[in-house]
Length: 406
Image (cartoon, rainbow, N blue to C red; front, side, top):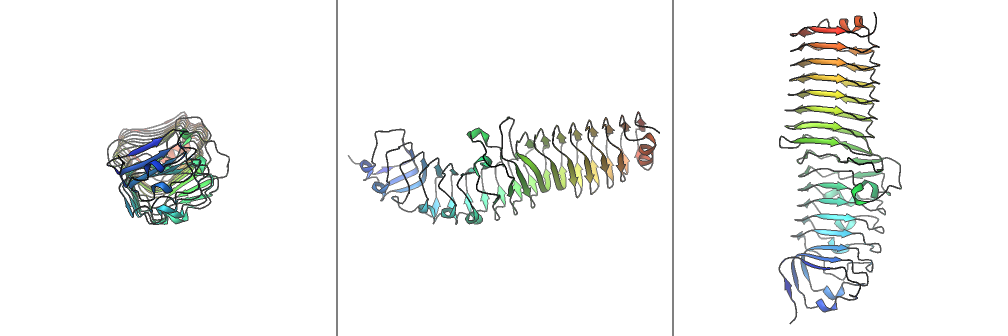
């Protein structure tokens, strides 16, 4: 009996004895994903020329140079597209009519792909997106991609041929934006900075920007999100946390109901934020290379602000008023030279202490609801600290001591 239809997914994988797919010539439809994996002696997909499919995964198919034996994919794919680790594959022209993908889009590890022109009409992906490829020299034709319901994962160590990575039409990522991809085992050969810019991205619903917690080497990259408005939609955490390679982070706004953690990013040098609004705590802690923090607009944190233990931090500049609902802690930043405020209030205690090189404390604050503590900053004179604090109303009093002399 001839197999003519498979309702869901069909996987053919891991056989060196299969040299041809002629035995499937009668197959007319796969309702889910057709998955062809590790069939090194298959050199053509022509026997499947009559097949319609909901999605397609072609992975480690080193005998293929083309997917053209298959019929062109439909405009709307009910499954996903995966083209992964095919060392001799030159292109994927069968996807040129695709505008929407209900499943995932995974394009990586195809060293002979120089562009993604075959995906130039795609506007929406319903699952996760992963993009990488050492041979890529342009992704300009991905300019139509507007929305991703899942994660957008960038293979930073696998983009040697690119100096910039831009998706100019992308407005929403329904999941996370992870960028540390060393879990896939790649090691960077390119040491120049990769600029990742999403000019229209306004929402990252998941809440993770970058991820890491490992010691592997990652190509340095700058992440620029000039239109970002909202990160996270639940009271969990927005994590820009433990991300090797991330050098500069620029965002228009961080508006979220969640805790914000910018922590333990080993290569992070600068954070520039248009404005901040969060109903919880904001932490910038333990970033050993961080040199500057700049907020250009209102900095509103209903909970606590912690800027602690950033060994190389030199300057903190609040270009707009701060509105801290509870405690503000700026302490233990051993290289910090200056803090500039531009007005605002702290609802609880304000602590500026144990910053070994702090010598400049400028700009107004209106009030502190608890105690104002400025202490153990040996390069900041008590006289200068008291002069700065003179106009601040502190309901719990002012504790200015053990700084420098006079």
